Image 1 (cartoon, rainbow, N blue to C red):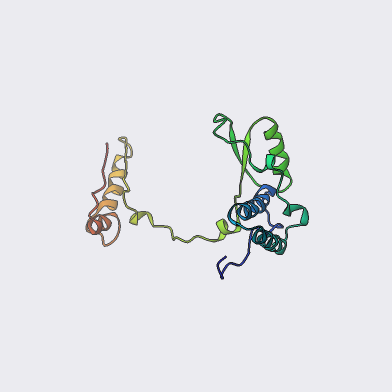
Image 2 (cartoon, rainbow, N blue to C red):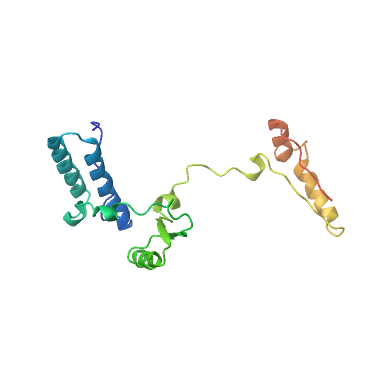
Length: 181
């Protein structure tokens, strides 16, 4: 293990489906079984995994991997027409819905929506419309609004303006705006 490894895994008290938490246990025990070669090292690794999971809030009952039949769900390749449904995770309710859908042979998966990160973190600033590349104006006009549309079209495509579409076209070499009647 790398010296910078922190043994931080999905906390058992976090708002995630139990299947995700059980998956952490299964993955770590599978890794121990597959990659550790000697019995002594396996015992040591399993003790380390259990201690790390306890530190992440996992109760004793959750540390045992599920029976081998429950470990791996049936392959999706065996039944490609099995419908799939993504549900937002709501503790308590999602598990009940999952059992209902499973009894009807509908595969569900949980998707976490409206996380604090998605509501707060916006790493990129929005690009103003006048600075976007590949913008095409499609103007369809009738005889009543033709004069107003032509006036607005000239405002947007005026190459003499210091800013705007004309300036953008000149600076980037993009083609001019197209007009349809």
